[in-house]
Length: 295
Length: 123
Image (tube, rainbow over the protein chains, first blue to last red):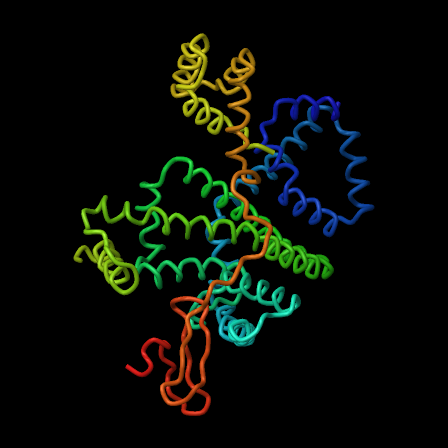
């Protein structure tokens, strides 16, 4: 009976439903059940379920699927706040950790930048060894993952990748990307929007997976082993989130690099004719107009 | 796995409507209109696309583009290093290379003065 029911139920399930059923939400609830009821209790519970009348079996399974799907849908709604947590924008009392963690990141980045500067100067006087060239390439790549100004550092890797992109647009063009993104989005070509939306979707999914890891901590009230599992889950999700964060960041920055002129045109602002300080001043004026209503 | 939600399928068919074979276009338009009215016509649209092999390939390619795991991905190579921005101490030969605009140049460890762009020294 149960097999027939499941076969019939899953026959035409769209991808999104299947993802919800067997995604992190399933791991959260299955893991929680294991911790709360225990493996033996779960087996006994399953045996008991099979002895129930068919209608009751279907009712229990439908209720379980409903909980699974509803919780997955709720988590989808929480993607933005979860992403902000992953970026290191924490509420009190976690906010107290921001400064010491950012200081740790700052020390590492400072060391990397000093070494990068040394290698760049060495490169001008004599050629670098293959190992030094590799090191220079690695440091050059690492630069992209942090904001130019160390005062803007965030305590997390994802936070630094996204903050780096935001601050680069400010430093180079004088435009505030957070404020202007909705306007630029409306001016982007459809293909560009699709690429960026797909990148954002990947990032949001990782933020959601991280959020499920955070929720998994709840099971630690029943079984302390749930806490280390939740922490490993969160660390893994945060580590995996760096790649989609980089893709999203590079695409948004590229959108500003390539299409920022459309903002000037659409808002009837004179486009800056020179790069550098002149463009930054024009960008600040446009940003101020959007934020304050006056150029 | 491509995103096969009905909304995505409707969007892809709307985008590709002009490229659809003339024989299929009226039916696609009709199914899209029914979708807008609230009917679920995504599977019918996909079945319809199977009638023309080339069009089906275009639909599949577009559906995969919508998928989060396809589309843009960065190149796997290492990024090169163009010359950086050299900042110097106005009072000695100390210099430091900055990676990009927006970085704090810092100060000379000997004279404790802010470093200036190399081009400004000696003006």
